[in-house]
Image: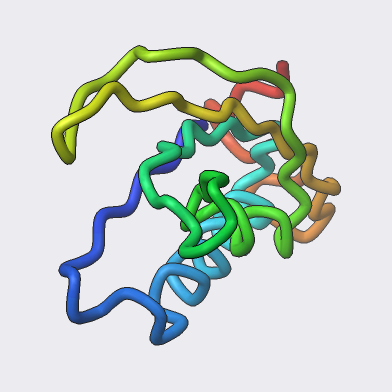
Length: 109
């Protein structure tokens, strides 16, 4: 499973992305999905730090995602090349999910 969420600029910072991600992770766990990846764009420059920030990395970390790689200059936006963080999460099994562990037709690899 791979997730992507785009929020309108006026919706950023209000917890909506984290709420959406929480619902997605819960649904995945109940359906027997065991692994998920996230491609997190590095687009924001942290004021005064000279560094970058992946604005959606924090919500992903709260749900167990961890960095497994970085794809350099794979996108373009905001007038510059954009890197992408590759993150992965392993979810616990939910034995009460549909059809038992894994659910019908759910890949467990």
